[in-house]
Image (tube, rainbow, N blue to C red; front, top):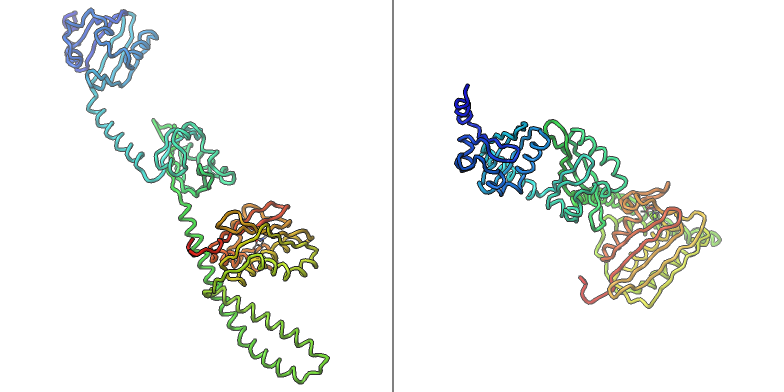
Length: 463
Ligand code: ADP
Ligand code: MG
């Protein structure tokens, strides 16, 4: 084939094609290339590529061609050329005399895939679930707005950081295991917990999906949902169900006990008259004990149906002093010092006195039971601000492991052989009925403090 024929053939192949010498001067430009570049062949031949297309100097065309020329390797790439508004698919072949460059207009194909990308992009940006991508080491590569909201961090605070510091210690091993499995190609569904920026721990339902490119896992996608509220509602439901069960049980027991109790009381009174004077003291004891049974059954009935009790202004210091007196002798027997301390003159609070007494009795009993070898129990009442009275019940007992604190107050939760697991539940119920709060802090082996806050009486009951 002579030179003329060869040129003919090159001109006719559909690929756009041109060649440059080692000084980047055009030595050949076929028809298709001239069409795509919008330049006449004869205007280009002998001209330097970079002075004819100066806009290309700052694009990937420049770096790619330099590589091909200087390293004498074939390069292949997609790139956008803004002056012509065209996406090109380019292949450049080096030779000793320069480069030959083949290219296609792939704008149409690119446009479609760009549209597709935008499709997926909106799935990412507007997703109500947190969506994020990791590299294989578990560093965040991308996070969507829902993720920022869920954890309270801006994306720049997360990017290129590892997820691990965000997971509480006890969940970390399990969470890492799922991540690793996803990084090995297996999609994972699981529940874990994470730290919000504000320090709270949230419950999270997560899915980890391998990101696969050319048959290789290159990262992991995560989708996550905050299920803290959902879980709370679930536990509250369970708790409410248990409470109803307790209530029904309590009511029926109380009922069963009341009737025989009434006849016992009647007959005891009858017999009392026929008994010699020397034995009369026993009857006092019997009557006192029967009275106690009556009180207990009515308390059980209260648990079942908390009647609306009358709130009256009362001195909290009086209530505490009464309880301390009541419990004093028991404490003495157990070698426990029981002190009450009022740091300042406290205002009266709207309350049901006997219920608050019950609260302090429960708390002091628990404190005493936590100190089998004796020790000190302090009750400190103060007024940290206008609106609240704060009362702390502090013991030096065995303490409570941190993971068990949350369970205290659930019906029947007890660690004692003869415990009922109802004391703290009743206590919390009463405090809540008074619009107060109860918190527990504890150190194992050192002691426990129960913190109670009660609103000070005010003219506005909702205040
Ligand atoms: P009970 O006293 O019948 O066990 P409670 O509801 O009063 O039931 O208390 C529940 C559990 O909470 C107790 O079994 C105990 O494990 C724990 N607890 C409560 N108060 C204290 C305390 N002051 N020190 C240590 N543990 C406590
Ligand atoms: Mg108790």
